[in-house]
Length: 94
Image 1: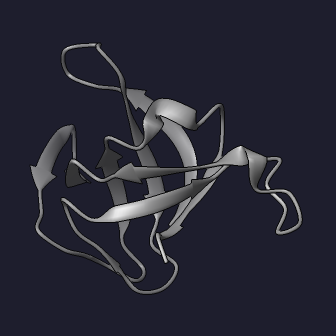
Image 2: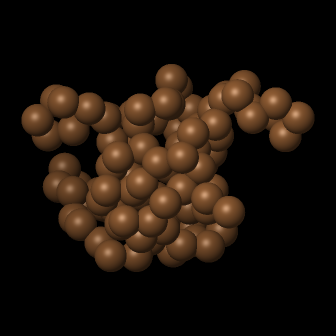
């Protein structure tokens, strides 16, 4: 998932990450690795492991919860915002 923007959550306690699923799928409860802007394979300092708490899609101004985001979908991910400054890449943990 290529994260391109952060939106404040409904209660303004955190952010939800908007991104496009480029390949594979994403589900709520899945453990993922968040790769920051300065990540490199030689130095994994800018990467963290997080759990996707929720997955939504936008329909107009409403957020519709979904159980599976497939490749090509634009999704909002909850629970992965702690280490994202502006943009990031989200991959499977392994």
